Length: 121
Image 1 (cartoon, rainbow, N blue to C red):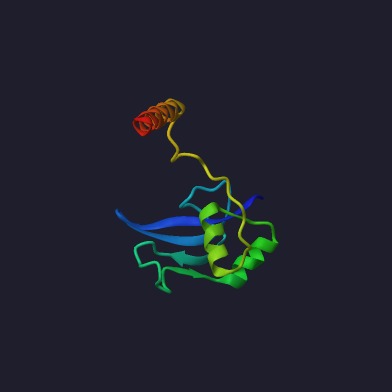
Image 2: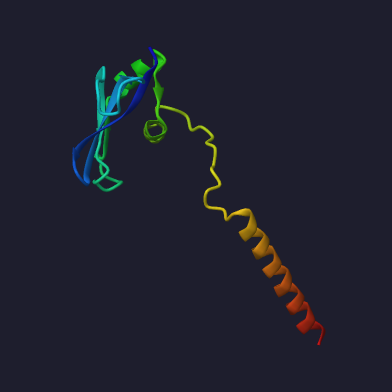
C-alpha cells in the first residue's frame, strides 16, 4: 500500500482549511484517510503559531514506515526542522519564450550599436 502524507481540504467556499493526513495514495484527496496528523489554515498570517499544527511524533512514525510527503507537506516539515532541505527542480516558467529572448537580444545589440555610434562622435 503506497502511503502519502498530504493535505485534505475542508472549509467552505473561498475559506479553505486543510487537515494533514496519512492516506493511501489511491484514495481521493478529501476521501478516506488512515490518521489525522495535523491542520493547516492558510488564512492565518504566516507568523501565527496556529497556521500549521502537526503531530511531529506521528508524522515521523509514518515517514519511518515509508510514507511519502507531498511537496507542500515536505516544505512544512523542512520549516519545522523534521526533514533536511532538498534541492528542487526550479521550473523555468518565469522565463520568456525562445522568440521573446531572441527579440530581447536583437534589441540589446541595437542599443549597444547606437551607444557605440554616439560615443564615436
